[in-house]
Image (cartoon, rainbow, N blue to C red):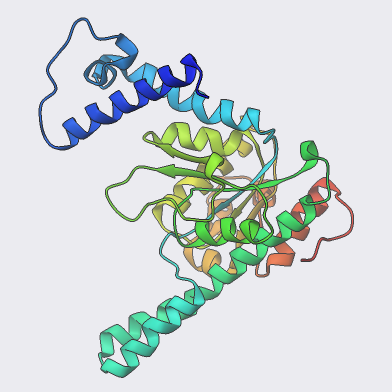
Length: 293
């Protein structure tokens, strides 16, 4: 039997949904001075109330993760555009059948990059395998940007073992939607990149960056900067795919030009295998024998 509190919450939720549907249809909401402030979408979406929206985005995922005892995460970044191996192979087969040279070239690239998807999935399994027999407070949980590609793969690896895992999704006009392997109760959506990145770091015990684009670079270099400047505690920063990262960024040039110190190159390591990525984290925290699924 529903309590009055349950009914009140449901009434508020339904009313909010009605208002949103009205706005999504392009119909202007009539201002209503008598509407409760926290229940007034026009008020909450004003420029002057941005600080309130920032606070709410900070608070909601924090309270939900606290309630589930999520204290330690391993954050996995990487391209949203890499396909699972089976999907990449289907595209290649279709391109070969159609005889389109440009489509064939793109499909071959997708197959080549699909191995990163499988490796991210294996890494997610390694983290879940390590944690499955530990007390909840000692477990490490996979956390990603919640989208497709590498993010999906890491969430999927944890999901394979029935482990809780986190998705911190971002509302974008393209590319990004929540993948189906995130634990529903830990599937969060953000509007503000800054708040989302704060949530990545608040519980992060390690960062594993797979090949990716602007978003991956943004997240990687912000974390490197936070650790370099002492704004964040040192954590293992693992660059997965050494050939990609060394072709993309010549870190030695930064040392040669004096814009970073030689010691800053010790803030991260390059790896090419899921087990090596996990070993780097395990060794940093002296976790003992390596976990293998």
